[in-house]
Image (spheres, helix red, strand yellow):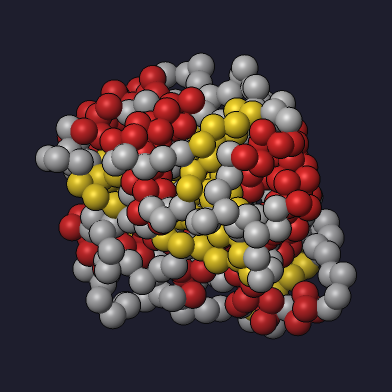
Length: 450
């Protein structure tokens, strides 16, 4: 099983590990000979530098259109915070640190180029590395050990390695079948485990060492319905049957209708195939309406907007908001005007705001470091990895093993993935932070955390 270490960056394949370049000195300065597919980010990490330190020593890197070229020599500056000769990170004291030792981070994910899982996790891992580079500028030292743990391999050999036993935090796994062994392992070695994606992990309920970032569909529905009932308590709900036999939204709409009925709240039901007159009669003129579809698909959403547009031509006084689904964020580019027009609320566990300056900086940094764009996925995996690493590493730095991810324990504001953990009984910690992404009629967008 291939290992990936902190000072070697993933190139085209996650399993390809770059070897240290032969260096030479010039005028007392160390020089690095660029090898094929090396990146500025990877070279900086190899020598224990930040990207900015490397650029400062090589001003030509600031020139527009600069590219690393094979066999070129670049200056490696002598910096007090650089890595020591044996490859360990030198540590800079930081106020509030619980330990002067580097935080030892393990990543156990499918890091390969064989299928979509591997490619997505490579991007996630690159985001983790970008976070470590940013934290280094703050004086926080991190030693990263990464293991390629694909679906078809036993994780047991990885867990027998000394470096695995010495981790403070491990991020992984991606597959439910690896959870039992990993849960036992972190208990024996008193390691904190961060499950970054939605997998079946019943061990969270019994193992206090585990953090699970994403919530189960049942928990999501329960939380979203509770927030709906609070935010739209003075609205008239209108459910639109979209005739989608493949829809998986029945558990949400059924649960919401039960809550409305339990509170004696009247609601209307209509259908995309209803006549325009029958459709319009479902809405009230005396109070604002909130529309709920029973599908998250784009064609039905577009048809619903068309139906609402027709109604509004003759019933201008009818106030309409829409309550959507996380998938709708994938349609923002095409449907943004309709989202604003119909006061759309989208519940989500993330928000990729491509207009945010922080988002744009991370995308530019990723492009610069890895010579490619992030995958066009929702959420962006590299930004997710960046958020997770920044949140947990800063928290562990400040609180050590007492870090619980509770409000007030981390000063980091995630770029894309909000995090707020609560203890699951006497077991582990689950993320309970969700958002409403609200597209307001005055052409503004806001995020409402709950």
